[in-house]
Length: 190
Image 1 (cartoon, rainbow, N blue to C red):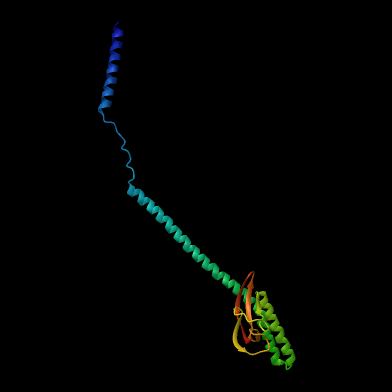
Image 2: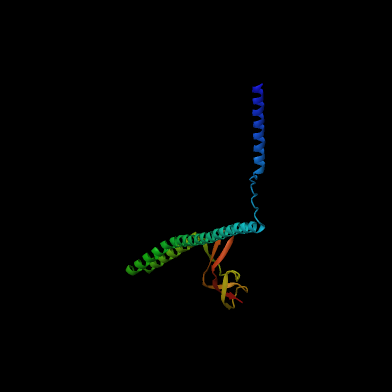
């Protein structure tokens, strides 16, 4: 029986120790994790403002880059167009130089006149390749969009008809659009 008593005693001691542990745990203040403080409304608005400011600055920079890029492309396109136009006109200049050289060594006026007419024809072809054509004037009705009347006079022609042309006009045609490069300077019948 002694062993039973000893077992009972050990069990009572164990129970007492457990109770004491429970008391100690109850006595110790529990470490409570403090809830993280929520962001205040002001902090939230400040964060939103910073985000919006960042987006705005990025858009401003993007637009600035766009403007620079399009200005550069515009300049490049203009330069390319100008070079193509001049390239079409250079053969005419070459032939004028040849005509001058021929006139200096040759007394044949008919050959010189023929050569100059051929160069003029070549020049008109070069303009045609650039979609530039002469504006027809003499015998046509005066059109202020195409013609510039510098003189009027009596004529057998009907009133408002062009009777004489002092300087040819030229027009650029591209697709459906037209642009007058130079108006024809004309005399109009009254």
